[in-house]
Length: 407
Image (cartoon, rainbow, N blue to C red; front, side, top):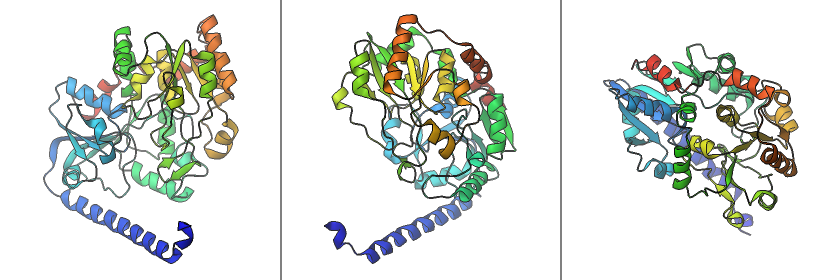
């Protein structure tokens, strides 16, 4: 009934006002950003940001932690999104609210920016600023210019690619985890500046902290049972399933009730959705078996406590492979994802470091086989590890910091 009473002309008018104000605000910020950039530079200031200010995590966190441990002579600020402020509390880090007036007065004068995703396109990079783009994954699915057709809301294929190139042209440094990624990043991002082929700093934690003591501490902190094994389910997002721009749907195809009935005596499952997925899952019926850790600050700890990873086309499996533990690929929509949405850079079915399955029954069968026979790494896994993980020696952060910050 409410919808019938709405005046379409008023709705369009209000929407138009919102859009105009948004564009005006961006232009105002852009101008202010340029003007502030003429003020004296903070030569020792680094501004960090992870996943649009939503997390204290990933490659930026690893680089930050190495700088702190090295007693580097820098002032460091973490840019955070106001709706995620609670994730930055009690971290003993200095923060600044993203897009605030204070942020506007600081960001253009910083000597360094470090982030793992694209900044808003309207932000101009001052000439004095060194922009380190860490990115956030080894690519399986096609990226940026390499994507044939864009299915994301609020943009089209041509605009998306043009915007990506405008942003990547601002990057002074880009981190690559391996030679395979270097070649793809150069082309897909149209990136011609300095590539640091170092391994991923975020994976230093997996190499240096993979101990029983650390795993027990993480389980204790998160009230996870010590007498059961942990399955981590970490799928990616689907470009064509969304609520609005930047907020994506996810239809959980994994049958949690069936998993609990078959595996609940020995396992729990931790769900970690992609940071762009906006769904809030109600796991109340599966209390004690299924846990929603989608908003957990850093997936690296979830990797360590997990005995098995279930994923799909997410780049998490490249990182998890460093632990040399079982990976199961739950790919119920592989034809659509491969042929219509993104496309892959290599023959995924042939080279995936674990079995590809489409039904929950098959997931359960794989896990039971591992329980009975133990986990035996295949030649395909060893080949995969050599190609994608060979640089991961726990020293990636060191290599990046020495290159960019000369510490």
